[in-house]
Image (cartoon, rainbow, N blue to C red):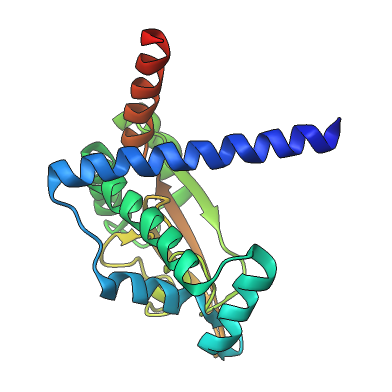
Length: 212
């Protein structure tokens, strides 16, 4: 029974991903949003990073084939769909950008600003919930959508001068460096997640169910 439930769950997740990608492509056409080869290659290069440096293309290809059963052409196609969806999610979520810009302005107003309190007050002030968190020690090459790499550019206690737009589609981040050494960083963050695309997609799917 548990095995059947897991299979059903993964099938549902896969189908939801397909529907989300299809809806994202529709919006992308309407808004003239495209994904360039350079953007795809930059993302794939990020995926090849490890604590010991960048792994070879051959090793990465072998790993994706062994663990996911995907050839280079197949995983590039999948990543292309996902990255295009991320671009659409950022493009349609104007409110998240407005809130993130407002929060970073407050975060940069003084060195003693409490990030946790600032995130907590966002729901009341803006009607959009922000998430506070800390990374702990992570490698500068950590695969976290570019957060560690951006934190590594800061001085201890410094707030990033601009918003960090996660390459994993998880929204906007306001970063402050806690500590740093030769290979690792520790930072705290406020994350303003994206929600507009998911809301629109849900309405479309509900509408289709009603028509049936």
